Image (cartoon, rainbow, N blue to C red; front, side, top):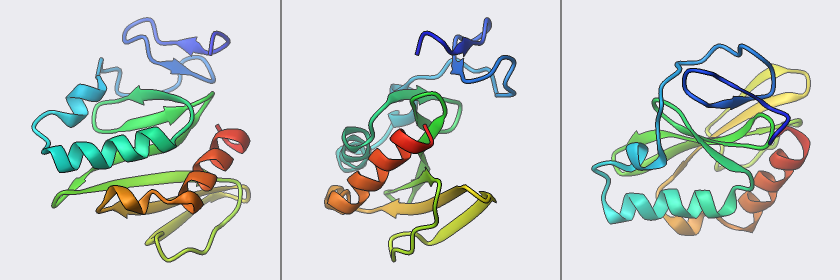
Length: 134
């Protein structure tokens, strides 16, 4: 990731200079603060399946190669809200919403309620996002 621009204030890396962001120094531990062991296990399952570097922000933890290609977005009643960015739309019941941001950019939103939901299909999609979008 040495070819990325890093914000001089917060140190966060980006694919292009002066990318707008919240400019807050955040850590994965900040994201997990006050979370139960079960919630931490959900995050660990997603993190272990996501290739790339963890890129914590104010309210989420993205996973980055050059760009954020997946993220843990927050918590909802003990479940982890997340997304994966793909160059194609994937119809899978785990995705409760798919946002088309461009003809080749689809954000697939899902919720993890147990670590076992990070199955081989999701692992493949996370790898695809890393290779093609990240």
